[in-house]
Length: 122
Image 1 (spheres, rainbow, N blue to C red):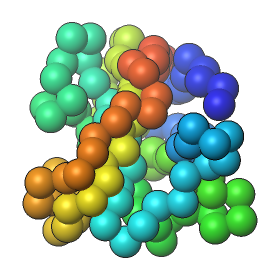
Image 2 (cartoon, rainbow, N blue to C red):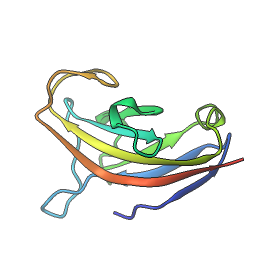
Image 3 (cartoon, helix red, strand yellow):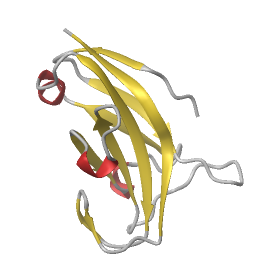
Image 4 (cartoon, helix red, strand yellow):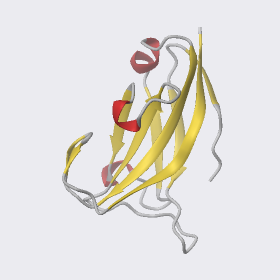
């Protein structure tokens, strides 16, 4: 999986396809009790205190390619001050997802995309 530094103008939309690699070389297919979280963060900010946190479930995953399209809307990027942020994704397996950030104790949490620069231009 290729991870890229994102450079985006404030107020623009953004999307990027991603997958969850497995040890067998295939991409992981989410189950009903899984979620992939995307977080946009200030440098050194804890994941749990993200500026923006979005959850993706099995309904958001392409069953053929097993890819998930991460995305931000113009309204979400318009509110960001130009500067350097970081993005990351984490897979939460198991537990019951009530809403983003509100789930029973998961069986596993694993970082899929390490913190990567996300630059917002004027």
